[in-house]
Length: 86
Image 1 (tube, rainbow, N blue to C red):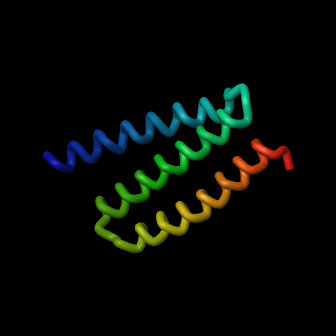
Image 2 (cartoon, rainbow, N blue to C red; image 1 turned 45 degrees about the horizontal axis):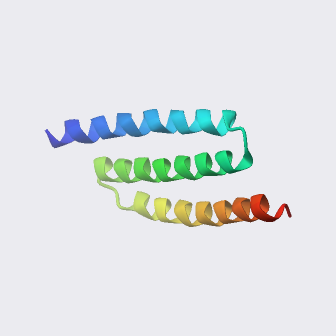
């Protein structure tokens, strides 16, 4: 039963990833695109965590941590660009 719930959650995450990608491509402003990119990153981190749990390999959590840190720096850079126009 738990595997079924985890698989349903993975499908929902993939659907939301596609919807966030649509917002990234169609967003009318740079702020919309930045928020969509951040949402896609969070969803991807969740999917990496799901993969780590389903495969039983802890190393994927390290990958998710590094990816999250790099994403945070990228989102801060984008936000700074949008606010100041540097």
